[in-house]
Length: 374
Image (cartoon, rainbow, N blue to C red; front, side, top):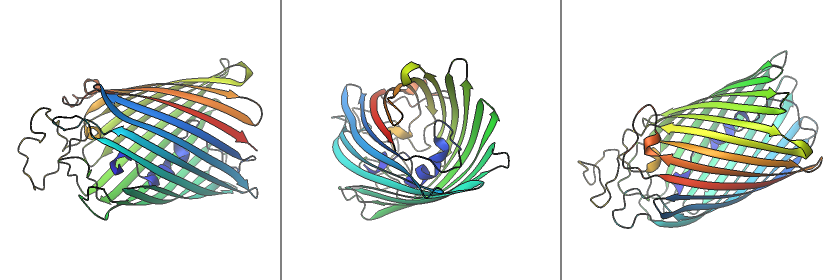
């Protein structure tokens, strides 16, 4: 399961504060603590095959300390089962799998007169993969408190021990950098620009996929822009964002995200959302040919050429529709439910053609959460 991780834990820690939907940039210690419990169910399907499903309960805590500090921590358990993607298995389609991942993170923040400093650590473990990460981030406020600059540094160390013993004691190390600015534009507008870059080296191939040989180094860069606008008369907020990503594999991707946060009477909030995504394939990705030899043309066994049929490296487009319903029960309690429907198609890629051998995929998810303030 080690290749299912979308981003290194270090990078996720660094970006956490900058990627919040509300573009929070307050630099004062929280007055109240909070505890949140969430449960996520995710299931995907492809060409009539049983695919991955995930059950993921989690808990998170935020605690103010001594007026100038805060401590945040979270823990989650992912139970994953089903089948891996139908990538180049000539007969049966997908391979069965089951796994459990346990992960946690903690961060400590010190609030200063004109900013804050946070240090964090994260740990994730499953039967064939372990990841450890550390990070530090500093935020600096301008004199008028309308601008916040952010700088971050993080690193992760991963250990890979596949059960098929294709490799043993493999490792991967990653360094992550972040720079960002959050700007209050008007009394009802706030914008944010974030740049991240990571550089990793080590084992990147997927030991559970046939004919998968990837470079031992990967560089990734991301540009994220966000804009929140408050509509006072409608008692609503719009959240718009654009994300550009590229890496040394040759992948480039564009993501557009739009949300409408509508406040209703009696503490209710509705948030419909739309996300559009398009991706160019990696330079060494090849489309498998079902019913024949599942190898790229000219493939030589034991050769050193980079190649992979992992569908996450393919060229495709995707769309996600979502709806979040939240209820503020009283001053201390709130509850929310979020539904999402994801559709992926090769033909939906823009700025070029998709990978023709990629099968269509769709997924559904539901998340339920409770929050208690104290």
